[in-house]
Image 1: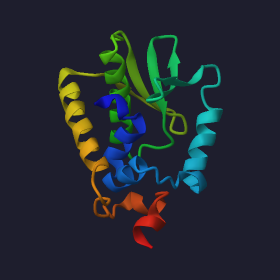
Image 2: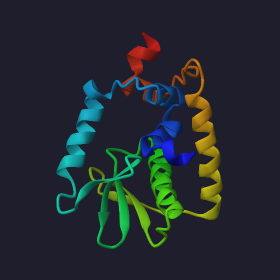
Image 3: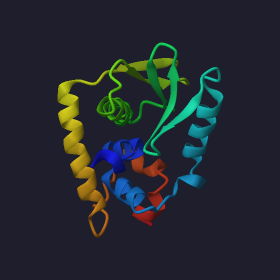
Image 4: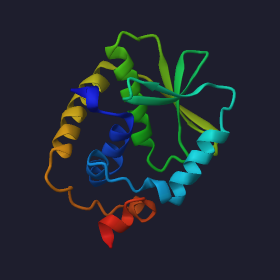
Length: 164
């Protein structure tokens, strides 16, 4: 079942279930959002020595893999740090399910000059399998979940859709 689940879906699961529903239904608002555009510029200008955007099975898109067998996800800020960590855990899980076990993960915050090391535990695998089922349930809903109305909402690409 995880074949249809992308890293972005895992990320949105932790950020906002409503945003996840919109994304699953191909309602995309990110193209014009200033924060998303700034994140793309940061991604393009950081870690230039590495091969970037490693697409695997058109399901996961790893920002880059270092020579130390570490996969990296680049984020602009730590505002939704848990979501970025779980996105990397999902990448590790996806690769683990395909026999790649000797790899670690990192979430990089180049503007902060910080990184967070991410590893995949047996408990994480159980949690991810539950999350995958919940994502499928959210995707199959007829209407989006209720507004979360979080502090993050004001900067969200979907703000107008949710609140106006």
